[in-house]
Image 1 (cartoon, rainbow, N blue to C red):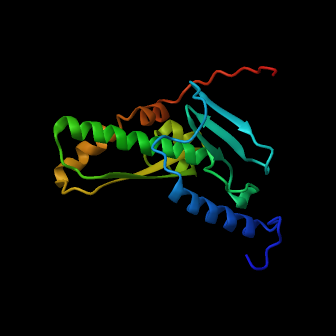
Image 2: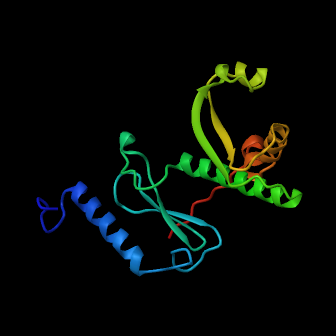
Image 3: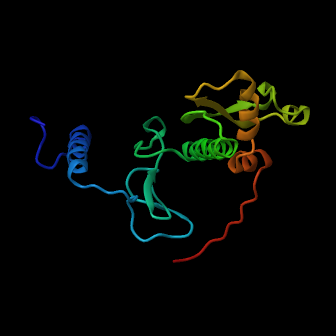
Length: 186
């Protein structure tokens, strides 16, 4: 920070200082509870007024940011909306598999799920129905790769994939969802 001004007006200097302070603070402030204030029973998303896309997100007691990458005009201060959807799918998949493994007393080790999202041309979608491919346009495709640390026999892989497809978020994405919206003046 030898070239920084006292206001840290350069974004790189401000970010470096924030990371340094945050790293130092975690050594002295211990918390086994998630950060946040009063819990709410739904998810609230509100613009922060910072940047073009940044939103403050509150889910229960948990607080975070949603944003878009710098490449599309955001500040990259949090996951994008599609990242959050991918997070939901990955977390639900891991939790569903963990419940199954515990129920069946399977030692499958630690589970991790990598999820990527892309918009692809319907005509390029091998797993889509003929009607979906003929409809043209683009569709959303989530690619999910499940990793387990344990020594899992190959014949169990198909069963794990079958169970992963039973995760509630996966089923919602596959079936589609209805969204009801209203406007409230505050």
